[in-house]
Length: 309
Ligand SMILES: NC(=O)c1ccc[n+]([C@@H]2O[C@H](COP(=O)([O-])OP(=O)(O)OC[C@H]3O[C@@H](n4cnc5c(N)ncnc54)[C@H](OP(=O)(O)O)[C@@H]3O)[C@@H](O)[C@H]2O)c1
Image (cartoon, rainbow, N blue to C red):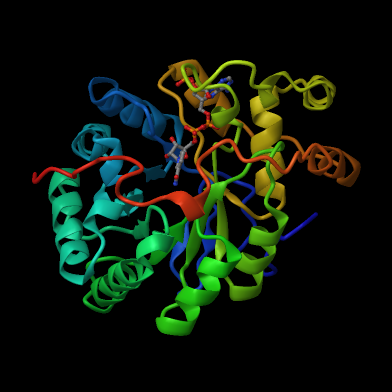
């Protein structure tokens, strides 16, 4: 399946050739994730990624490493406007005033005055009014120029419909679990219809293999179809998966704290997958999510308070 958005600006075929969001802000399609990057490793990882050519970092208040992301960006020596910073508001900070304050907490920890993309980490279906209030706060932050774009994460089509009925600004991005074993075609279709960029979390299937998350999972990294395609292009399975996303118009934010793998994951712009190869990877979808069902998340799911800076 191909959901590539039309238009010359949306050709994410070089690392910093950005996707154009629905409010004309440009976002590098390939970013760098830091979920489960220990704070003490994060500044080095971010600096390494920026040196390797990444220009987009995805963090979250809930990851506990925004301060170190800011540190890594400063250490890189790049100007602030050369790096696209994305972060997320955690559910315990939902509500209009709480979410305005969540921006201040994140911006202070990151050491910036403006955030490029601020998104709601999850819908909170049991408390959807608070989710809406949080989103209205994002709209206000956008109007005030404190953020350049706003979006959501883990929103299913029915959450998007409810959001659209009761708020004004169409989210620029919906960040969802998306890898060859879980491709969420209905979510991708809903995003495309609304002009929302689909951003893949666990783009190389991290949720299918990260340690300590349950035994007997099938790692998409070991998939034989992907292995065969990788061999044909003299690339790794991770590179093939990232290329599959990019050729289908999605944003990706692979995570690594290993310098070699950080470099490997951005080295995906010198080969092209054929339509048959894209189709073969699409066909691997098992329709089974690795992460939590977005309809089940509320503050008690993860008892997490976001500390003051
Ligand atoms: N919105 C949400 O709810 C949500 C949920 C999960 C993740 N995310 C975001 O999405 C980002 C990426 O997702 P993810 O961290 O779940 O998974 P991922 O990027 O698909 O995979 C990360 C895992 O793969 C390993 N890895 C990295 N590059 C590799 C390579 N080339 N070959 C083999 N293994 C490799 C990493 O280990 P090493 O570090 O040792 O290389 C890590 O264990 C996160 O960091 C976060 O920013 C968002």
